[in-house]
Length: 347
Ligand SMILES: [Zn+2]
Ligand SMILES: [Zn+2]
Image 1 (cartoon, rainbow, N blue to C red):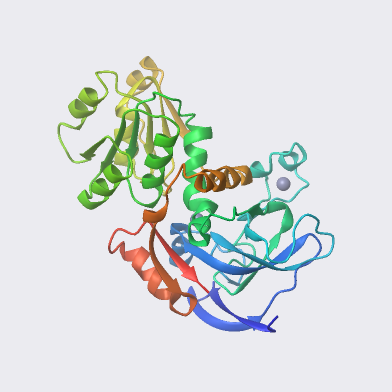
Image 2: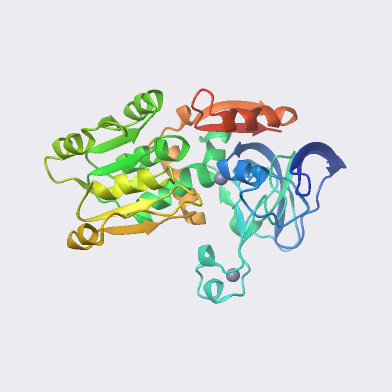
């Protein structure tokens, strides 16, 4: 085991990034040390750098979507050993609040987020809580496994839990970038029919079609309503996801719902939500649900789906950059050049 390692460090005061040689951390009680294989670059990492997210630490290693191999097991850890292939959970619940006491760790009032409240995995090694680990099946690729923490599990939880997509539901997805592409794939896995992708970007629409959308429409098409009506045989959408997080797209999603339809907002921004006139919303008994995050069990289910070939994420890895060039990856995501789904860092 080396004494030091290369790690990305975000400095809150100057909002700058450095690559530093720092001490390899020691796993404490209940923790393991993971040799990081891959770690994704997420929009929320950009939000921290750009100052849209509050900082909790003066200096922190970023990256919260990792896969790796256990390099060292801390005291009191059972069921895990060196060499195990794992995905760490991206949050540490406090274990003491009301939510934690009833086992609802996702709803923890004091959840510590990886790469915000403690060091993440844009580094050669990462310390994780053993309780939050998911085992990666032998036949699952380590790069695809890294996508399961957040990039795919957040859309999964939105489809399965928040939207409760059922077999035969007509589903629309506004914004088929990194999140929306996976919403399309997972809605298909859940049995949605038809699936309609809506975006302003023709290349993203083409990709969505390849990955399972039955129809692709441009959001600026003045006949959008008529086209969705025709595609759904006149009934409109049972579920409409907005993966963009802006006023106009959430409004479009809500406007195209069937009676009792549910719109699920997955995109994040500081804009106000526009749900349309009360009359229409209430007459049709529409619902609007906010979504964030996933549960550890979701990562396990997705790992099994990958293992059994129920899900193919090979198109989701747009680029892999070495840790030494993490800033190139950040810039590529920020500029959206080439419509990346996920860019991975390889330490
Ligand atoms: Zn993320
Ligand atoms: Zn808690």
